Image 1 (cartoon, rainbow, N blue to C red):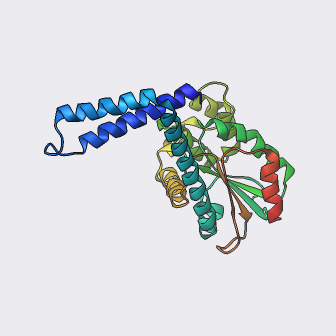
Image 2 (cartoon, helix red, strand yellow):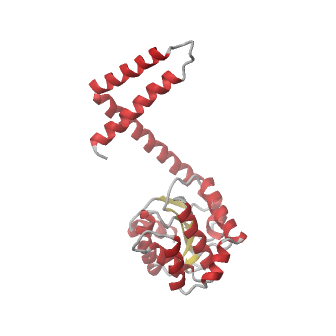
Image 3 (cartoon, rainbow, N blue to C red):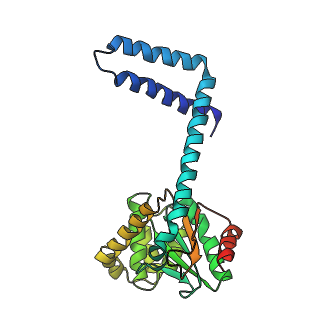
Length: 259
């Protein structure tokens, strides 16, 4: 973020704060004219002392980082208690070795750039680890089109073609549309009429609902979000939480620690 952008954002924050202060006082506390004076004084002070804006922005950024780090710690602490839902939820798409001793779970969104970047890394991990089971959790958080793509992918799983179709969605060279999603479904060998019907089925809707509920319980705040642990984990074995995009060697290290 450029320095000017940071200052502009901080100025906006400070101005809104002053306005909020004035607006939250009762009419008996302050008159409209006095409220306007307060806002003017604050605005002029910030213009003359721009370093204050930078300091405010830095404090805000530190607070956001601290909050994110705290959330990651909380998720790591509670992950083991959700082992069954993470590793053995009914109808989850599974790639790799379904009987693998190590399980990697990925929560992702087809319109998430970092999830797209993770796709070849996940493919390489599967090829390099014949004893790893990969569970994909459709987690559409980027609007109606993401939800449409997720429902289509889960419907494709009902036809046994999840991997090919999901791969096509993640490797699209153009922004996804409902028409392009259906075209990729046809190209992936899917029965499109059945796919459309299954997309609106109670089973697919429940699968998405369960994924979203699990993500909320785990306090996930974005995609991709990965979990690595023993497939046989029963709530006591540690499960590693890996938020965000990572390199193949980073994910491999986490897998090696479980083996």
